[in-house]
Structures are given as structure tokens and as C-alpha cells.
Length: 358
Image (cartoon, rainbow, N blue to C red; front, side, top):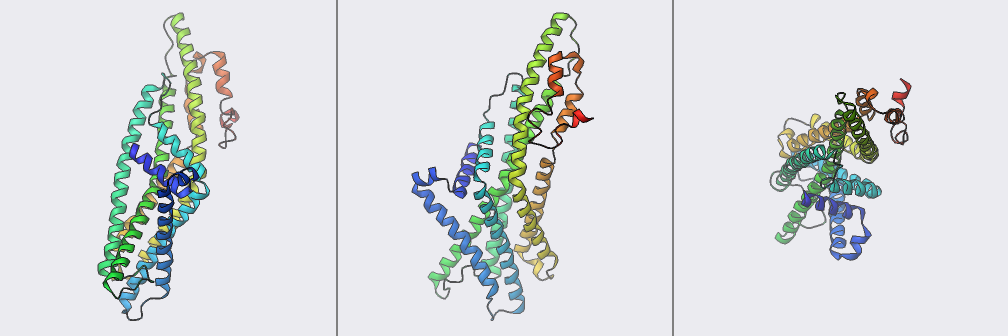
């Protein structure tokens, strides 16, 4: 996971043009320029080839070339628009990334340490599995697209390089492979970042819910044990409140930051599905179209997963609080609970006073 956080941090710094890094290391300047030129050449080149197709091609070849260029334009445009949005909101992305990176080695309070270790370990395992799956999936998509344009359907993405000689043809092929690789890496980064953030938010939710269960303790047999139990639950309540306030802040940042990325992703996925639905049977046999279909379905499933995280209602945690035997708590803690929904969280999330109104 350390390598993953370093790679994600590198991507955020590159896309956000972090001046502290760009002024210290010249490598980042060259890398940023290379990535920007690659995506620009791929996007503009595919548009230019889409407008000016070779007249010597047959009708079927022209249809195949048009379809592949349209898909290429959508994919690279998808990456470019997400990159622009990340550049405009780089501070929010960087804060969430630092929070996730520190979450793995975070020292929880003694009362929550067991739950913290349990769900942090679970989050790390699922993050690694998702990263392997997405990298393998997008590698398949990029490889399918590259093989299609190089061997089956001759499509020149870089139209200003002459392919009449062997040297120019080699450069064009190399640039096509580079464009596919850069687009694939960018799509993996843009898709894995919201999923990792959502997993860490869900991890915090599980920690809070399991901690609330510790408050539901039966009445102690002796008065001394009862007083000690009340003091312990009072301390646990304060720890839960601090963690819950942090959850509200991160959930609000998650909703504000990734909503536009999800919208761009949804539009791109539906456009790809429209291309698949309105193509002929001859074109559906192309390897690129099959990879695009699975890619669109993958994007829609990711949006559904993120939608489930966004739809989380923090008030549900208050419902768990309501099921606690509050008559066993001290009067101070009971008053503390009554004002908890309105204590700092009302401005972050709507319906903050729901439990007070009902």
C-alpha cells in the first residue's frame, strides 16, 4: 500500500501542477509536458482523423475506423475532462489522499483500537484487490484497443507523421501505444481514487457502529461497578463523537469532490453503450467494441458503488444511539446525546435535527 499511496500522490501532484515538486525536480516538468502533449495529440489527432477519413477505404473499413475513432475520442476526452476537474479542485483531492495515507497507520483511542485495527486491515486488503482487478481490466482494454488499431483496423491516430517510410511508421506505432498506455493509467487513477476514499469512509462507519454497540452494556451487579461502567461509557461516547464529526467532514468532502467525476463518468459510459447498441453485427465483432462494452459496464457499476456511499445517511448512526439504554448513562451524557445532532454537524449535512424533531 505504501507504493500505491506514493503513486497516487505523484499523480495528484502532476495533475495539480504542485509548485513545490515542479520547482525542485525537473523530471516532473518534463513528465507533465509529456503527458499533456500525449493526451492533446491523442484527442486532437483522433478528432482530425474522424473528420478526414481516407477515401480509399471501403464502406466497412470506414465504418470501423469511424467507430474506433469515436471511442478513442470519448475515452481520451473522458480522461482530459476528469484531469481538468481534478486540477481545479486539487486541494480537496490532496487532503483526502493524505487522510487515507495516514489512516492506515493511525493510532486510535484505546477504546477503539481493536475495531480500528480490524477494519483498517480489511480496508487495506480490499483496496489491494480492487487495484489489481482494475489494473488488469484496463490493461485488457488498452491492449485490445492497441491490437485493433495496429493489426486489424488500420487507424492512424497521429495524422501529421508520414507513414510511407519505415521510420515514420515506427514512430506512429510507438505514439499510438504510448497514448493508449497513458490513457489507461489515467483512467485507473481517476477510478481508483474515489473507490479508495469511499472504502475508508465505510471503514470509519463500521468502527463507529461497532463502538456504539459497546455502549449497550447490561447494568452492573454492584454500585461501584455501575459507577465505573458509567464513567467508561461516558469516555467512549466522547471518543465516538470526535470520530463521528470527522466522518461527517470526510463524507461531505467526498460528496462535493467526486460528484462531478461521477457525472462525467456516467455520460461517457452511456455514450459508449449507445455506440454499441446502434452498431451493425459486422462491427460488434471488433475487439475494441467488446472491451468498450465491458468498460462501460464497469464504469456504471463503479458509479452505483459510489452512489451507495454517497447515499449514506449520518442520521442512521443516531438511530443506533437511540437504541442504547440511555437511562443507565449519567444525566450529563444524556443531555450531551440530545444536543449531539445539532452540535456542529447541522451545517455539514442536512436533517441534522431529525431526532430532535421526532
